[in-house]
Image 1 (spheres, rainbow, N blue to C red):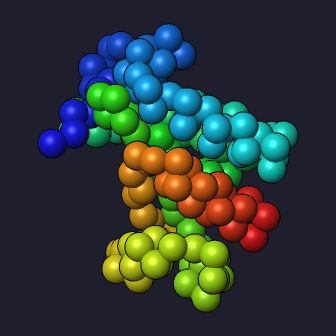
Image 2 (cartoon, helix red, strand yellow):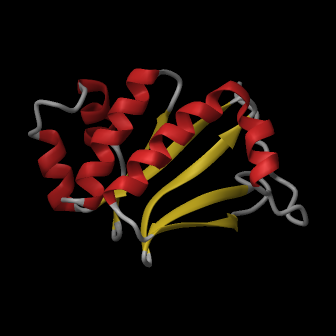
Length: 140
């Protein structure tokens, strides 16, 4: 089972703590950030605390719009995306998005703000999939 880090409410994570927690997977996160920043110059981040079970998540925003949340585990990470109905339709009809991702979207619970999926980023192919999803999220 993956161990979520950054669960102490009084200990706000910083860049050094993030690098140490992500270990070797940090390079994958950096590649995602580089692509994200090339798509939009207005990207900024903020740490938000979501309680004892979830802990601190790093929220990535384009101006004031949520792009994704970084869920930090010990040595790995996941990204949580919420997509509007139009974008979900585009992704589901796309030939370049993996079937696994489409299944996640098809089976995900729908909320008023959109459909949320969580993607584990464990390989370079996962990074490429996230970059494809970022294009849908930012460009449409």
